[in-house]
Amino acid sequence: MISNVKNSILLPGSFFDDQWESKIYLIQEKINCNTIYFFDHTVNPVNSSSSVYNQFEAIQKVLEYKKDIRLGTLVTNLKRRSAYEICSSLRHIVSSTDYFDFGIGIGDDKYEKSIDTDYTNIHESIELILNSFNFDKESLSMFIGGTSEYVSSIAAKHDLGINIWNKNEDYVSKKFKEFETKNRGRNSFTVHQGSLENKGNTPKYCEEIIFVTKDSSFDEFTKQLDSIKGWIET
Image: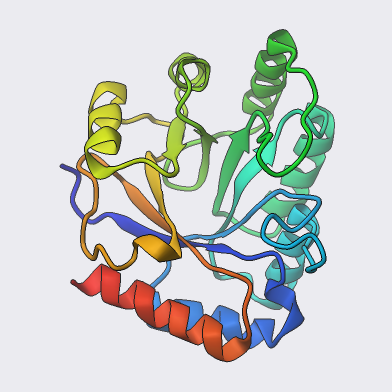
């Protein structure tokens, strides 16, 4: 098992609606956060009437406010943007910071209507991105989200880390053991708020735990961070 698992956080869509600068401070103060992640949805996945940030615009906004924190995407949908557009956004980011965790995905039909996947274009997009930047686990990392055999094959082919959601500890540990560690990205497991009651169950061979926060008021957001802190410290 890998020691010193990194603890990170995924921000909700309405994060910027209420005292977001103070929230950034609290994240760092309460959970010693490694990476603050932003999701990639055009509508809020919890409530379509709620606000939602634009992923790369939100990242730039936070970098302009505070440069000495590590940010990331969880995940950027490769079917929604061209690789050239993604590379342009990444260039803006790396011009402002030395550290960034770039998560990619191939679409999620659960929340938004997807388009047909052209697997050739997916691989071409990944190759273009990899050839445009120096990805490594310590500074500019890259991983892919999902559990399908196709996602696993992409991670293996391109030496990417993998992110897993909504699976039990035994499944995640087995998957990470089979998958092994990668040079370009960390293997991470995402914990939802409802799972925080099962405190301390970090899957084996996991390099990073990413905690999901929900749309809420400032006070409720603070309580969520307290729950995450309790999970970490147990």
